[in-house]
Image (cartoon, rainbow, N blue to C red; front, side, top):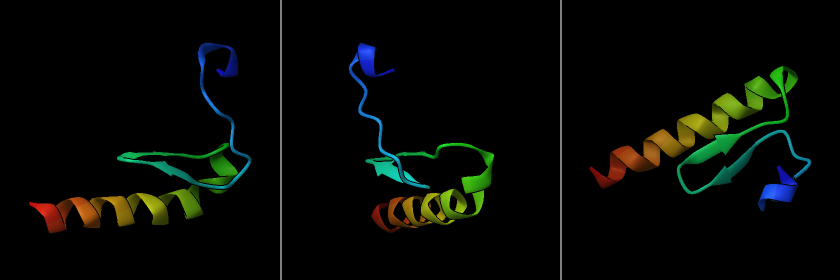
Length: 46
């Protein structure tokens, strides 16, 4: 991914605009929390 221009961040959840990612399945609880926050922000703008 880095060779294609991506930046690796060694965190349980990473938010970049509307994109939420994580390192793998053990991080899903923290990823879910971050994902819900992104959805809430999107709902506030609607």
